[in-house]
Amino acid sequence: MKFSLSSFKFNELGQFRYGIYFAFMNALNWMIALGSPMILFAEHLGASPFQVGILYSAVFLFVPVQVLSTVLLPILGYRKQLMIGWGIRSIFLIIPLIICSKLQDTPSPWMLPLFIFSILAFCFFRSIGACAVLPWLYEILPDSTRGRYFASDSLVVGCAGVITLLFSSLVFSVLSTSTAFTLLFMIALTAAILSIRFLRFLPQSENKPVVIPLSKLISKAPQLCLQPSHFRRFLKLQALYAIAGYAFVPFTTYYLISSIGYSQSYILGLTALQFIGMSAAAFIIKDWVDRIGPKPFLVISNFITIGYQAFWLCMLCFPGHLEPLLPLAYFSVGVAMANFLTATNKYMPQICKKKEMALSVTLLGSLVGFLGGVASSAWGYILKSEETGTISLTAFSLYFLIALCIQIYLLVAYIKLRDRPNNLAPLPDRGLLVRPFRYLVNTINLVEPPTRHKVD
Image (cartoon, rainbow, N blue to C red; front, side, top):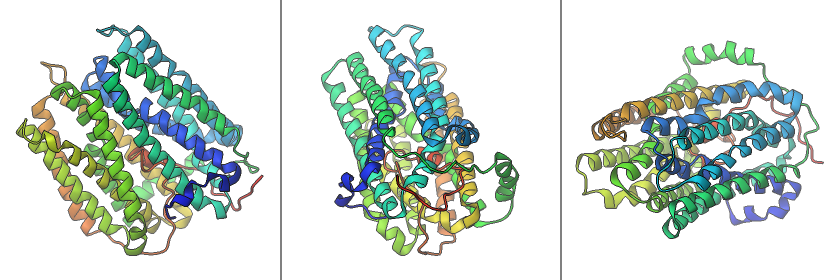
């Protein structure tokens, strides 16, 4: 699947172009409701590191709900279940707007608990609908359109992410904090409503979803986890990374505003640089992954990750000297993520049996995502300073030291990884450019693949 400007000819996709419009609006919604603006709003309301960890990890912590919700697909169907889940989750975006309307110079005690409740509820109902997205698209997209569709999807989602962050940075630089948050959550709610509207124009599936029984996942999971295989080794490496890697985004964002005192505008600008780096790297390396295999890019990703983790550790140990290099560090984070996820997409089909692909990918996304969520929440508790209530400098330095040691071990392990370049189709990368770790959760799919594709 190649990216090109021709992918933007949405009219050639026919009725499926509404799925691209849905992806764009959904990305606007997610980037505000569950991205950096959400973390900044929580900090503005007085959230502790532990509470920030819970909020950022909510998508991962509700992975079991997403897996269990697949049993509803044969009853409700793809479209109905997705629209119910997305519709109910959108209602909870009204709560941040209410908080913004009542927000004065000092937040009231009731605001933060209510905001945390709204995000947790948002993620819960998101999990109910999320299990329908990918299998529905696989069911209705004809083979001749699928490649162009997913290429267009990734392009618009990546653009939506960068646009959202740059716009957010702008509004915080020209508006008061409460006004800026009000505007952003209004955009998130509007985008949520529009995304649901676009779903109505996608064709219904003519086939009833056939769901792999949860009992099969439960019985097969121990075998996939315990039986020696290349999949088990890769699963262990991914799980090890999740212990520290998933916590990087929320706590670095929180630290920059609560401990260093950078403005919301500047932090969002840094995050935008991260996604620009991710998009640029993904476009460059995608064809190269097909030519020379994923292993070199997994190694490159680890090299870069070691570099920016060492940078953060040095910045914490020698404050006031390295902060001007933060833009370069954030750009490198995006480059590392793009290398890692693009290579993972290509590598997974190599190590999964074709008949067990859905089970294997679901198992990896479920275990790694949930472990990453639990670990991030635990780090939030560990990093909290009892004296200030914010992040402890000593604990944060220890976090990066542990992360650095893990990453060095992973680098050696990836260098030894088995890799046989082939022409196997990679996993679809919809949303990779704007949902780096949540992308793995989006691949969870217990629906049997369709035997043929139909177009209404």
